[in-house]
Amino acid sequence: MNNLLIVGFDDKTDFILSQLDFSQPTLIVDDGPLLDALELPSTRLDFSQSREIVRLDWTRHHLNPLQHIDYLQACDLLAAFQATFPAGQNTLTKEGAWDWLLEAFLGAAKGERLDKLFRAKFDDPGYVSAQRMVRRLMRSPLLKQVLCAPTNFPMDAVVLARISRATLGDFDSFVLGNLLINQFQGQVIVIDGGFYLRDHHIRLIRQGRLFLCVDYLEQLSPSLREAALGIRDKVAFRTSQNDADILKLYFRSVLNPDILAYQTDGAYRVSWGE
Image (cartoon, rainbow, N blue to C red; front, side):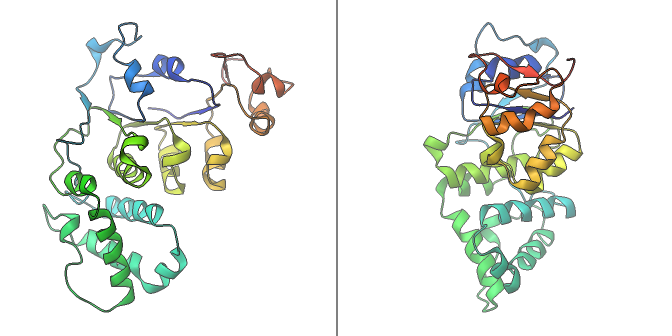
């Protein structure tokens, strides 16, 4: 497993396909184009040595985030909630919503489900805020179906997660993507990193298992951008001028940032082996 930062707004599909290693547990979160390319006969992958490949189908696959949850997983789940409900975080923190959520996650019994949490009536403001967040998730028919049944696909396989924001909407897509990323323990490949990734995903970089793709570096928070730029291996497709000015420092043979900003379609530069 390893880290890789890919920046630029050209099609990155062919390059990413050339880097895939399906002999290890791998999660790919994509809106569709990369996963569609995997079906082509010309795909440059040796599937004979691959692990089981699971294409997630949201009509039959389930992901229960409370199943066999431990302390670290509970913290990751809390971070996913904080990223999903960023508005008024300071107020919610003062009200104790995050404490209520973490305690509920840690106290979840075997087989417990999100829709069973916070069923009691209690006037504490933090409890009510936590209850509202869970209820918001459960108002989505898709999220209730996916998250409230035992996980029924292997987490040590190659998991291909097509998450179409055009079909599912931003809210459901963000929740599904974040919970998958947080639960998975192998190589994680996120094609739209600017949409899905937040500061708590910096741990994936520390663990050396994140392929991060962004069109523009400014899509990332300052902390995540700094961590991403610390990744040794970088690939630059056609970038914005601002990104070219930043990335030229990491490409030894690039003296003029315009080389990165005005590359032709399909052209790219790598930061290693120059």
